[in-house]
Amino acid sequence: MAVQVALSRANGARLLSAPKLVRVEKGLAWQVLTERGVVFVDAQNGSVLYSGIPVEMTPTPEPSPVVGTAAPDGVMSNTVNAGASTAAPQPAPSVSTSMPSYPVTPSQAAATVFTLVPGARIVAGPELVMFQGVPAYEVVLDLGVVYVDATTGAVLYDGTTVSPMPGSAPAQPAMDDDDEDDRRGHKDKDRRDRDDRHDDDEHEDHDHDEDDDD
Image (cartoon, rainbow, N blue to C red; front, side):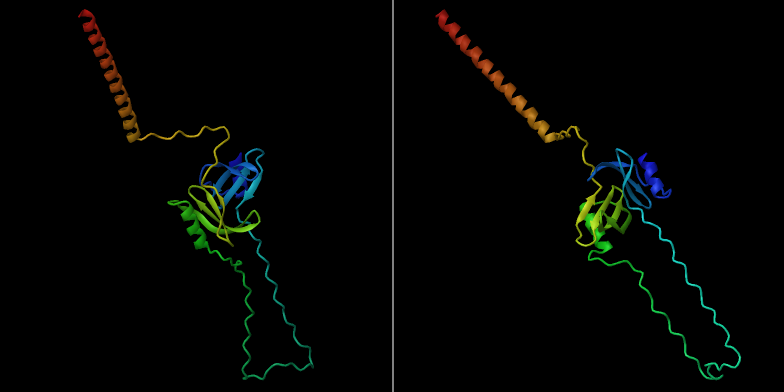
């Protein structure tokens, strides 16, 4: 169900990896990575907790040009005599449509992510989004998604690590060959000590028997 909800929010975008169960502030959620961004779906009720899908903006319609009307008869126009040069029209001032700048650049955010997750591969981003009301860079990796604060550079969320489920047993530490050899060596030494003590006891018993015979 989480995949269907996420793909519906992503307008049918392609799924990049299998959903991952992670722990967020509101509890457990499914982290679904799509080619358009990441979506967090509540594991209990299936509601969308967060969507990193960019919202498509509706283009603003251009104003219609004003059509000039001809001057009535008998009215002197302010046209310049033929042969005189006319003034070239001045270009309208350009309106800046660039996104607001922040102290942390996308390349710096990517460097922070590579330091946090060495060897990871960027699938999408860094893209400037709002994460829990904070401007942040969304960096989608092949191992998960990471959000980096666009103002401070701090990691707001690391989705590359999965919190263990409640009640799961901790993994037992693996024993290397050196530990196994040491354990075998201690067992062999204990066996030799027991054999030596047994031989000493038998020797003492034999001496007592000879004394009794005398």
